[in-house]
Image (cartoon, rainbow, N blue to C red; front, side, top):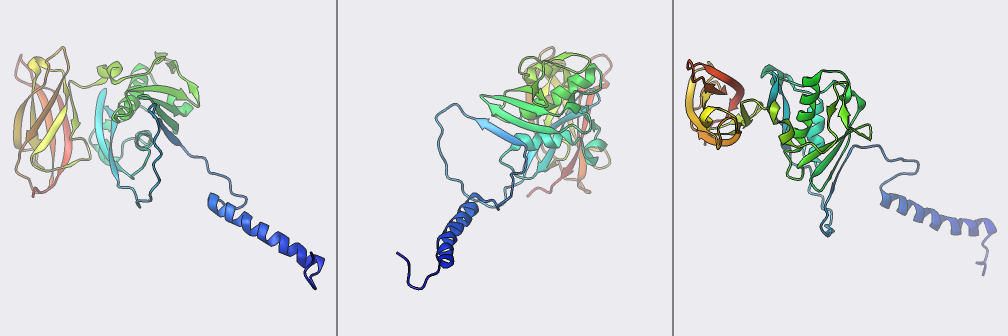
Length: 303
C-alpha cells in the first residue's frame, strides 16, 4: 500500500537505504573495506591430531618479546646466538626469518658466520605431528660446496628443532619437496633430525650461555661434549681476559660418545660489565689447550 504523498522515487530510496546500511554492517564485521584484498603473508601452521578444543580469542595486548636460539657457524662447526625478537604466535617462523637474515654485528664480532645464501627468504612453515615442513626460496639451494650445503641444512634443522613441537624437518624449495640439495647432491629425501648433523658440532658445544646473553652469578653452562674421559675446563673471564672463576666440567659420556653437561659457576662481577666464557679441553700429550670456544658475555649485577 502506497504511503500518502510518497512518490515512486522516495519509495525506491526507502527500500535501498536499509539494504546499503546492512551491507556496510556486513563489511565492517569482516574487517575489510570494499575493494580491499588480503595481503600475502608467511604462515606457520601447527596441526594437532587430538580432538580440537575451540578457545575464544582474547586480546591480551602487545606480545611479550621472546628469545630464540639461532644456529650459525663458528669456523666449520655450529655456534649459537640468542636473539630477542618481537613476541609472536609463530615462533618457528620468527626464528627462521632471523636466521635467514644472518648474524648481526655483535655475532659477527664473536666469530659467527652463515652459509645460507644472502637473499634466501621463507615462504612458510607447517608443523604437523612433530615434523616441520619449511619452504624456502630458490636462493637457498644456490652455490656452495659440500660443507656449505651441509652447514646450511644443519643451521635450519637445529634452529627449528629448538621448539618442542618439532622433532624433524622436511625441506621444500619454492613449494617443491627437495630430495637432494645443490650441485653437491646432499641427500635429504627423508625428514632431517639433529642426529643427522651431529658431525657439524664442535667437540664442546655450549648452547647456554650464547652470544648476546646477559648473565649474572652464578652462570649456568649447558650443552653437549665429545671429549676424552668426558672432562673439560670452563672459565669465566673478565674484561681484560683475567680468569674470574673456573670449573672442571664432566659430561655424561666421554669420547667417542657425546654426552650432555650442565654446571653453575659463581664469580665476582667485574667492572666494566663485560667478559666471556671460555671452554677448552686439555691435551693429554702436552697439557695444551685444544677445542677452545670463547663466547663473549655481558654481565648483570647480582641482587
